[in-house]
Image (cartoon, rainbow, N blue to C red; front, side):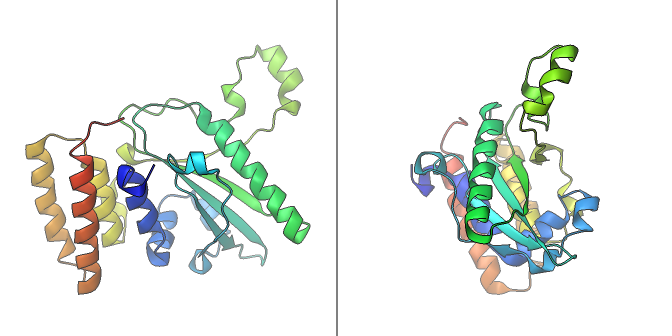
Length: 231
């Protein structure tokens, strides 16, 4: 599947490949306790890929390396899920990615860094899958108490676009792009009205070349998505 047939993936991927936008995004989406420990201004997008070619058609392969203020390093892994239905396989997929990352870390450095699974969700249905892998197991209280030590548990950080107030974002780029993604399935009159607000917001972006770049990205995104039905 090409980028052109996966416009949500392409738009978010390109947006977060910009270091300033990625820093701004995580500063406004990660828990405060996590942010306090990370030196986000030194965030780097790694070139490593741990996702199979088949999965690349559905998920965004972005792995960020962020130094801890203590001097060690943590990796923030961002998985962008753009389907409009809830996919329980996201937990097993993340587990596979995390395992591959740790395997690579140990092979290279003979040590492990923290990996934070991060899911960007903008499906039409409410997210009901929770945040913990262990919670996906159907066990009695007694069974859970006995078997939980054998389950490789982890929690994901969920960014549910439908519940986000974009006005709290400092970055005009993020407010514009995520706003369009948030409103993309609304009716024509409502969506066109929102586009007027977007264009007005973009006038506050002083960098003319970036304004043009955003216009081009949004035009391509809207043209592709509004011509198809949500999957």
